[in-house]
Image (cartoon, rainbow, N blue to C red; front, top):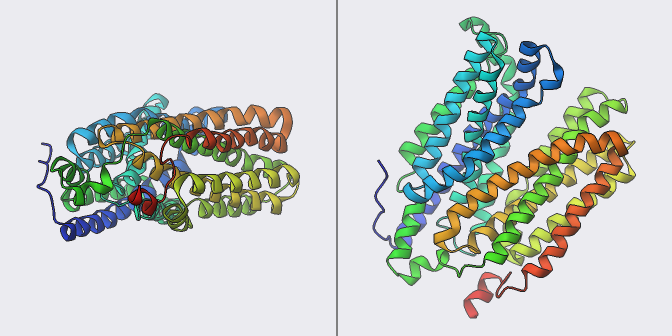
Length: 424
C-alpha cells in the first residue's frame, strides 16, 4: 500500500530527514554493489560451463544491462506514484528473485532460465542507479551534487567487496550442497534481503513524498530547492552527456582486458588496471560533487570531457604500453565520474517536479542502452582498427558533448550557480 504523503516539515525536520535518507541510501548502495559484483563475476563462467560455448559468455552481462534498461522507467514511474521506498524495495525484490533463478537455472542446466534470471537482477542495478537520484529529493542547490556523489561513492565498497566473496562463497556452496559456482549467490541473496529490509524499515519518511508535500504546500522556504522552472533543453543535454560519457567509458573499458592480453600482459596487470579504473569511477565522486556545486553542472560536465579526452589520447598514443593503458583507464573512470555526477544533478534541477522522476528513469534507461551498444560495437571496431582506433572513434562522442554544451547553455540560467539563481 503506497505511503501517504507526509505533512510539510519544518526546515530542521526536513534536514534531519535528508541526512537520514542519505545514510540509508548509501548503505543500500553498498549492499546492492555486493550483490552486483559477485553476479557479474560468475555469470560468464556459469554460461560457458552450461552451454559449452564461450561465445555466449557475454550474454549474462548483456541481460543484466538490458534488464536494467527495461525496468528503469517502470521503477521510476512507480516511484513517482508511490515514493522512493516502495520503488527501491520492488527493484531489490525482483533482483532477489533473479538470484534464486540463477541457482535454479544452473542446477537444471537450462540456459534460458539463466537469461531471465540475469534480466531480473538488472532490476537491482536499476534500483541502485535510482538511489543517486533519490539522494537529490531533499537536497538544496548548494548540496545537490555533493549528496548525489556520496551515494555514488558508496558503490565503491560493494563493487570491491563483491568479487572478493567468490572464493568464500564457493566453499559455502560446497557445504550447502549447492550447484557448482552458485555458492557466492548466497552472499548476493543475503545482501539483497538486507537491502530490502533497510529500505522498508529505515527509509521513512519517504524523501520523495516529503519533497512533494513541500511543493504542494506552497511553502517557498521548504520548496525552493525543489521547484525550478522546467528547462527541457538543459534536461536533454544532461541525458546526452550522461549517456555519451557512459558509452565512451564502457566501450573502451570493455575492450581493455582483451587488448592487454593480446599484447602479452599478465592477468594480474589486467586485474590491477580494472581495479584502478573502478577506483577512478567512484572514489573521487564526492570531489566532483563539490566541484559541481561550486562551479556549476555544465562546467563540471566539461571537466569530465577533458578527462575523457585525455584518457583517449593516452590510449591512442600508448596503446602498446600497459602502463599507458592503465593511466588511460584511470582518467577514463575520473571523466565518467565527473560527467555522471554533474549530469545527474543537472537533470534533477533542470526538471520540474512533475517531470523529474520520469526523466530520471528515462536517463538511466538510455544510459544502459548506450552502454550496451557501445560495448557491442567496440569489439568490431577493435578488430578492424585496433585499440588506438577505438579511442579515436570514441573521441567524436566527447567532442559532441562538449559542443552540445554551447547550445544547451542558450537556455536561461543554464548553469548559474545557486547564489546567482537566488539573485536573479
